[in-house]
Image (cartoon, rainbow, N blue to C red; front, side, top):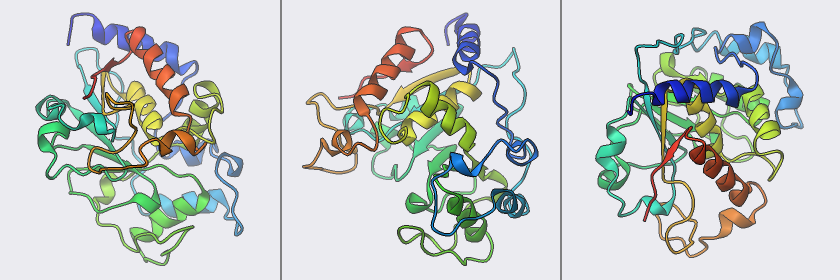
Length: 274
């Protein structure tokens, strides 16, 4: 890390936040900052406060992130799933970070040379969830209250098997490392940064801003199209490679502009793919 970059990133983080957001999980409950209207509506409503009470009986309420240590440089790799990782040979560079954040499926076995082999944080929603090694933090990105009901169930009774699609009945992860992406923070990104372009921000965009708030240095891999302009995953040959940009769920072009702005301002470093 270059001299002074940690300070620039911290100053940049203060600019980016616009107002302080408490990321500690129990603050979801204590401050009442999560409201039903921050999550997608459901046919069978749940009381958010009751859901959170049950949730924090299963997962820890303490924060895994301490206050900023001026003597520390926490280097983080945000690893997207773009096909531009294939052949990029960034594996060793990615694995050299303190935190390595991956998204949804993100396989590493067989892709170590390009995508790395280590993971510290894996961000998923219920429909993309998979079992993780004991040393990896499962970070749930909830879109609806039922997602919070599901994670409680998947770590205890196993009663939830279906949301809008089949989901894992039981999840094998370290309960002490389970974290919840604050829906208030999700809304902040949607309101202040992506500005309602697309129905909601992509998971990659959510993870990028998460990293900006907890890391001293943020390096970005596997975002955007490949050198041929194709949008696809590094582990698949997808002949419908432009579909991500056409669904209307996310605005890939607008998000790419945000990443370019952050890189130009020196808040992140984007490693170009192939």
